[in-house]
Length: 174
Image 1 (cartoon, rainbow, N blue to C red):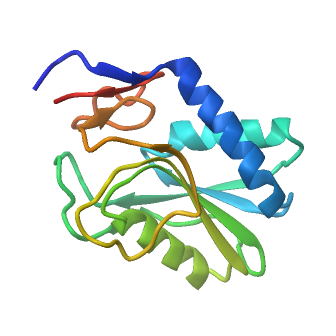
Image 2: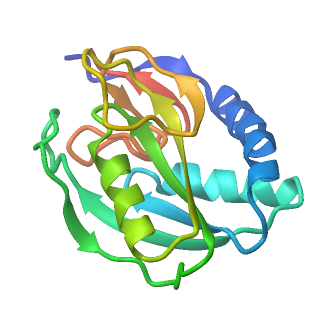
């Protein structure tokens, strides 16, 4: 495995995709919508997307869920552990669940279920990157900024055992 990531999307390309996604999402949300960030990987995307939504006139609220399905492994553990639950009431509100990457679909599916169970009137999902997957997933995100290749991605929230999340670009280590 390479130690220096191969750049797949530059910082500027990442920001352009986030801005385009905000324009796509804004008509489906309102200022009562609660953006629910999946920690920890989704933090970079959620911060940029909520600011981009504000630039197009949509001031969503913010909350977070901390789910763990990978630990420091490169493959999903096949289950989700809730490490920190929602803090903001969702009853009757629209929720927008945000995550960095969609591969197995396990984390996003579990998050959407938890948000529905918390009383959200409508649940939308958005991911920055969707990776191809060999089998049908339980769900697909409503919004996707980038169709990613089947590579080991790092940067912009994605990591290798906790490293390289803070890169402002998306790279591949393979």
